[in-house]
Image (cartoon, rainbow, N blue to C red; front, side):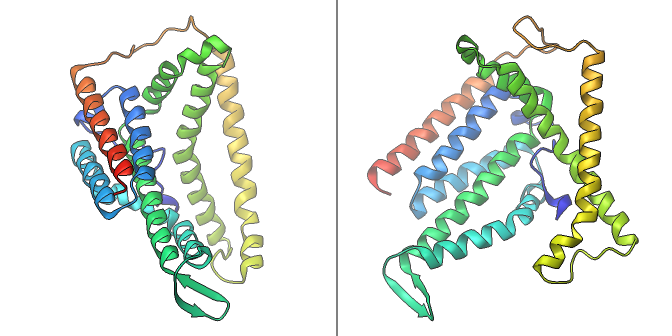
Length: 267
């Protein structure tokens, strides 16, 4: 399951989406997330599915690689669906003991499952087609107006970039520690819930120590290089919009208008 997490990873390719400005991809991801919550009908989710399928095709990222990330959220997805089915009031379909299954509960569970899946795929597609450096520059450039109210935009963007960089590193470190502990006789599968939590201690302690050590090494390296943020810091590759970015913005605005139209019409 650890190897199945795709958020934070980068998949190199030469697609149009890879060459787009990171600000365009950030805005596109935000528009897609908004549209997922605007759509409420089968027709609306069909539009979102076609849009997402088109972006995946253009990105040249293997479909198996993208959908592999859904394995990591299977339990969250299952719990979300069960709670929505059992706790949403409405027209009763079945009554099993103290539990009541309603028509509205099933509908809500399906919508929440679709939204959660599309959120993960959409976010993964952005990180898979954008390097951490590009993502940092795009975030900083997009949030730059907040500097006028003394918001540390550069520091926020840098922290988010470092966090994304650390995700695959920590996942790899977790996998190594888990295999080492299993070789020493650790059991992470058997036992009740309390026993499984206790069995995680030999995994979590060295993982936290390793994470703090890496963070300390990174801080010392940045300090040794006299790193400091601010408005006067230059970029090796300044961001510039190209023709493909303007076309992408036009497509995104049309897609958002369709989503708003579906919401207004009640579709």
